[in-house]
Length: 68
Image 1 (tube, rainbow, N blue to C red):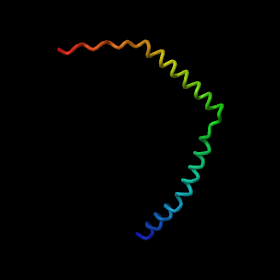
Image 2: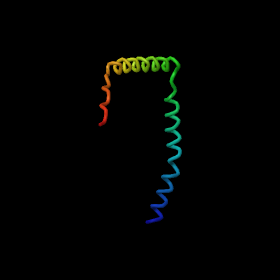
Image 3: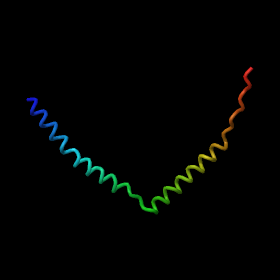
Image 4: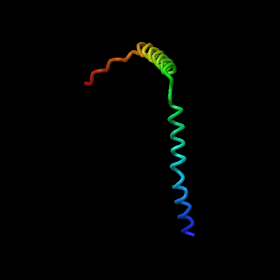
């Protein structure tokens, strides 16, 4: 019985690198972004930061009270 479990464990470990390699290839090929897409992403991020900057300009931070 223990030999069967050991055999199954070894067989499952032997097949995992193939699956991991295929998954890694899919991840690497799907992460490529064209230059036009990068430009659109950068423009959107700049707009978001401009909105954040406008919002932070409205925040008033009170001065600290002196400790006696």
